[in-house]
Length: 369
Ligand code: SF4
Image (cartoon, rainbow, N blue to C red; front, side, top):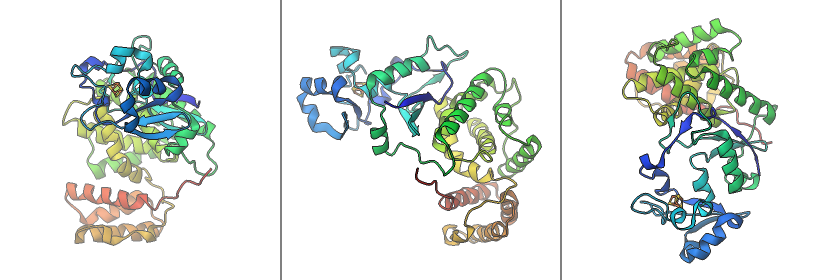
């Protein structure tokens, strides 16, 4: 069994199955351990063996029909749980939605799966919510699902860049998580991120320029937009699990830009944790590009393919960017230079997104452990 570390604040996420249309039981399959529950389930339901899709070191997975699981009843109850009790329910179903993890060294960093309509409960109350770290640890141990062999086979083990120690990375993530947890109901995402930058003035200046490029709304001050700020603080540590190799010199500005994009997008509708998470995901590439700020980027710009940019205006902007970046200009300077001829705000965003996509493939790849 892997060591476990939670990548979200303790006691703030809660779900109630009765409020949901059993989204987790519709078309995503399920799995568990042969020795815990699966051998018994196959004996009880022999046809189940033909739904097997995966088998690895004691674990098995079954597919589901697209509309709903074989065991989902019309009243949205699980037939296995109803007829045979909770202990025979597949391990992955018991753990869901805390089944979304990546492995760093020998530790699984666990964050919620936002397919589940989780809500944020404040003040944090680990004793009464489903998102309690202690409860999840207990369920994970009982499921026997989280082991290194299966995680590696599923491609969930993170390859770290040379020189990055798993312990240091995990400690950093615990610090970010705890800083976000402490800030809930008290202060802002900006205050949390500011703790992790060496030069607040440079951080503010780079953000001012990013904000001008994207026409971002004003940042939240303590007391304003409290609900959105708290949702951001609760969700961000989990979002980071997919971006653990972003260097420390980049991620504070990357998240600050993402928070600005979340504020802009969620002005269009109320922001549930799922909305915030999906906007963070959608904005990560663009924000990461801008997060180079006033640094030159150590990537091989010469590989940039101008043909990837459609339209004369964007293609010309790509050439301008490439020339400036190749000459060692800081990324924001190169971007501002490239955008000089693009006046339309929508065109600017299209260009920047396009640029972020093209550049992703050029970033130094993490080395194998
Ligand atoms: S086994 Fe039960 S809980 Fe798991 S997906 Fe099927 S209906 Fe849902």
